[in-house]
Length: 87
Image (cartoon, rainbow, N blue to C red):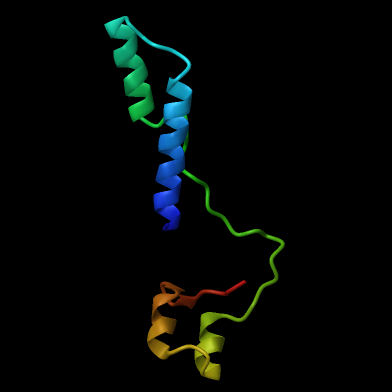
């Protein structure tokens, strides 16, 4: 299973679990609750970040120069003219 498929699977499973605690018979209440679920209010987007304690590794330019990366790959991992530093 791919990571994002697994993420969607977990969110769907949690939605089924959390909805199982109530049965809304009032149409206006059900409509509003459904809108809140559909808007993703109960599960924000995942936060991806780099742990600041990771040791800095070589830059993409250093890896291209050493021959460990292809020059085409070195053009991808950049912010403008600045090559990324790997960790």
